[in-house]
Image (cartoon, rainbow, N blue to C red; front, side, top):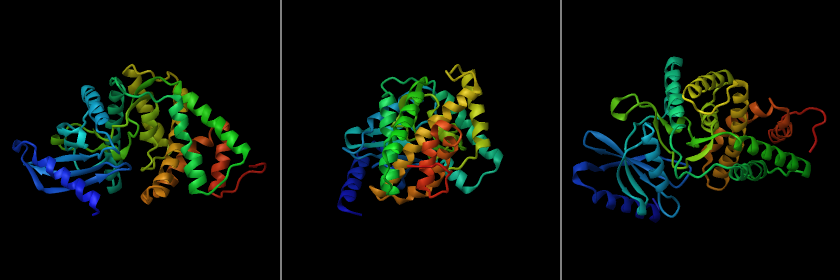
Length: 346
């Protein structure tokens, strides 16, 4: 452990010691729970008969205030999110209720029967519909400028840095047009509460009463007001779990039925809705390819490389269905050293 980590851990322990004795914190049980792609870390400790979670989000790299605000919005909407038991925002420290030890992703990796899987995901779809009815007060807007900026991660980090490829002017122009088309189409969608990473690692499998209703929802501090299909695309084209197209469609239709019944502004024609969420998924997955490449090359987090083939496959699924994305598909072919059709040029 380097000196910065030692100092941060000492600060965390010192804060915990200032909290009320009634919490019954057993400081000697403090242990790592998880970390993520940011500077945030999570710890678990016992407090009597229950376990609690500590979010360590060190300033100036992180800010816990968006988490606190968004947690209030989601809790008000009736969703199962961590309760804040103690907070020191200026230190980037929160003491939270524990929603259990197992994420959807971990449950999937451990092996599930299809009925168990469907039970989990139907609960997630119902939670998504409820979440999209939450207030968006105080949330930033996921606008066209932001969507377009995020797409630039794909040529910068995935194409140039990860594959060492240079794009000629024709391909660059084609990508620019495709990015503008995606951003315009996705910006035109109705705006609702967007979690932004509503997928298996951020959904807790709450199958014990003490953890509340399934699913528990975490990692929502980057929430925005944005396109209604974004979180559905995140869930059914999960960067960490492979779902074949028939399963994607089954869940999409179930969501669409529930969303319409709830009065959410989804297209009344499922074919149009299908196109909308696929285009949204393409935008998201191109960004993720860039993000995962950056996490590897810039931040040394090479574990994300294992997920790139899956994300690439999701991007290809959409790019090959719509002729307007043919230049993108040709670029992906080139990067993957796949044989391409006659007339393919760069």
